[in-house]
Length: 359
Image (cartoon, rainbow, N blue to C red; front, top):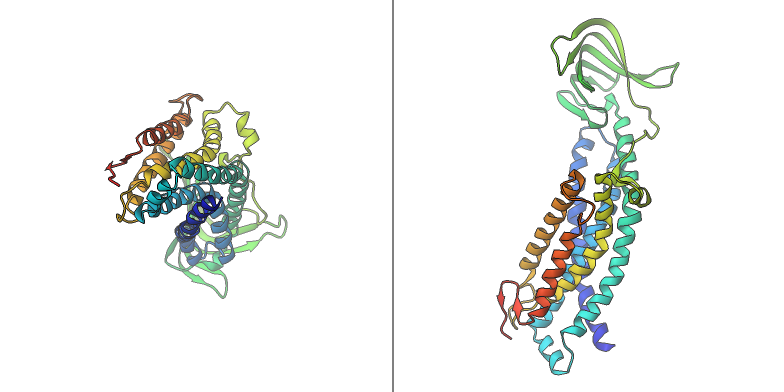
């Protein structure tokens, strides 16, 4: 028990540090995507924080497994580098004991990863999609800056104004493009302002002295309309309906679906705990190195293995979605390959990934 506790502590030390670093990197990368919209007035500051938070929750399903995987590689690698593994072997404690400790720890993390993937992730994605849709619906022309193009992805709109009078909440020489099915609608107006319609209570853009162009994509023709005053409804401020989103669908719904895309998503969620378990175990033989070679000697190799494995998983998911691969083997051939690679390393205890390690 003393040895087991020592091994667990040695794994947890780099685990906390690696997980923290990955969370900061992931959150920073995600925040950068929305900070530009916030700076341009398309998103409020609180919306950016909430979007990053929910996106971070969805990313935990792969941040935890890779953190555990790298922590095992670093911690066990340190034991080899400091000749502690040699001392443990001399005391009759072999690699199987280390594997047993890592296996027990990985079971706990696999259960957590399964909960995140099967239940927490779809919930977080649902909140994320709703929040993003609501953030788009909260667009206010008063927050625009003159001379900039603003893209409202939720409504397939692009808005531009040469000048914006923030005191009067009006924009001058405005341009708005909107995609409506197979038709592109463009409005050019001398002035535009935003108000709430008294009858319907909806927010509308009011265009003054402008021209409307309707251009079909698939055929010639179209029409041009000149107007003195025209209105365009904006989405309601309450949370809009987001429709069916596969990533936000419940696991129960996906389990009963025969759609290849739903099957791929369902198998992806189920593969997360399996991946967590296999990667943690793989970290033990992968970390094997000669004494005094440094505890980070195999980190680069471990990262390469993970990148290759993740790309294979993404490829298998895409093939399943497109029907190139059936529901079986679906995504499962990739974890099977990883399990085979793990078994090969365990059966060759004196071999490293890129060569023999002399102890």
